[in-house]
Length: 124
Image 1 (cartoon, helix red, strand yellow):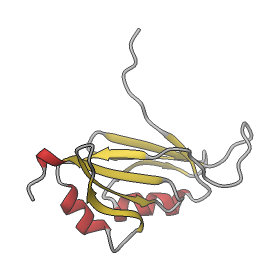
Image 2: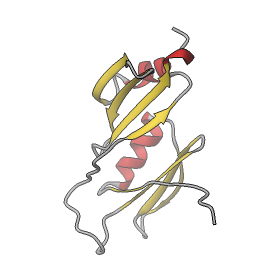
Image 3: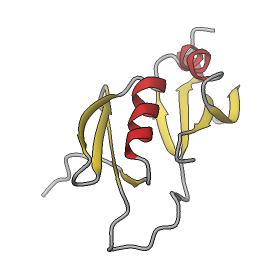
């Protein structure tokens, strides 16, 4: 047996707002928006994320996640320039001693999204 793919399924109370944020702000494509079933699937390149409305199987007050979603990119500077004035910033673009150049933002649900590139890959 082998696992072939991981697709995060995150909870939101605002499917349409979430699709709007990921499509309009980050450039994802909406693969499916199933309002009657309460879920959506979005994709950018090889990254797929699903969002669903809360269901009866688990308690839900607001979106929470104890970690972050880390996206590796081939041009973190360009992505920073595109997003820095359109999003809620957690931390600005900077180089870290562990060899990454990265920044972090919050999505419309307050999930933390980090974007990074190995420093030896940057063009600056």
